[in-house]
Length: 404
Ligand SMILES: C[S@@+](CC[C@H](N)C(=O)[O-])C[C@H]1O[C@@H](n2cnc3c(N)ncnc32)[C@H](O)[C@@H]1O
Image 1 (cartoon, helix red, strand yellow):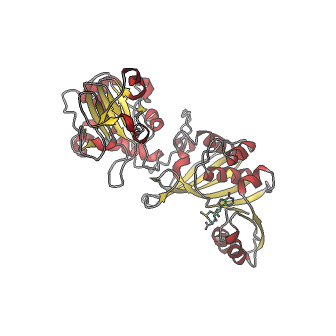
Image 2 (cartoon, protein in one colour):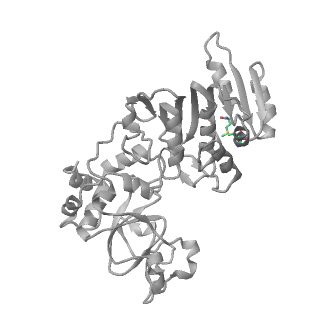
């Protein structure tokens, strides 16, 4: 067995305790922190073991680890890897592009399994979706079959990686075995076995790894591009655009933050402790501003107390508007489409669908683009004659119901 980032050896100790009679454990523990080595040594006393003091990434890149382990276990460190970092280059030597250190550990883990060997990793859920881990997902799914994913609903831990709350999973996978059903285990739903196609959709170019609880409903519709609509993240990074921010006045445009989404609509101006005006020269319009018209604005980071992950509101703008980069914006062809789209996005059905593939509170544009949507005509009918402010959840769900 290989224990990557072994710390004081907690995972190895757990495996040793659960080992069936007659099975001999031979373990290699890799740990970078010299201070932990005495503790690790004490935990491993009495076990057939080897301790390698060093950086798992560079050890792997230099071919210093055996590639025929039966089992790999890990509870890796978190943290981003800059594109130009030495670590990222080391991983490129192994043939995989990883955006963070825990994904690097996962790749090292399964690359050092024999055919048929199994890995268990306690990791954040963020590798399962989002654009950054796409190449990692492709690499992983080409090398291992997924056996089991255990998801934890608790979002109490704060990970430094992205300063967002995210869920953890324990993922178990086998090297080079034909992919069968995947076992899903939840702390708030019954365990289930799901065909692989229900986890990674065959036609999904993003290779999202979904973790459906079984409660979500099949959503009809097509991805956003099929409607001719687009969504993008707001273009203003407020701390980089200080000279543009101002009190609202004759020479400014509305500046919308996620804090301006309030009680089911966009409230502007609103006292949220942030400048509500944006000033820029005509030649900078394209860089910063969205032209007048009806838009749907979605929060990129939902707060813990928010019931839904996807929080959307309509903004009917009569001038150009600046949107903060913590919002995602869908420009719409008309007001009715915008209202219909906001109902759709705010529905419980969409929220359940979203939770099946997103374990963190961040709502990425890639997530929004790949979700299913009703047709433009259906959205227009949905929004027609309705107030742009979102009503109670029960009313939203009742309105959306006939489309499901
Ligand atoms: C989250 S702790 C887990 C420790 C132990 N496996 C457990 O579950 O209690 C991650 C461990 O990885 C070690 N570590 C961090 N970066 C490492 C690297 N590049 N190579 C090897 N070990 C590393 C840390 O020192 C730490 O002990």
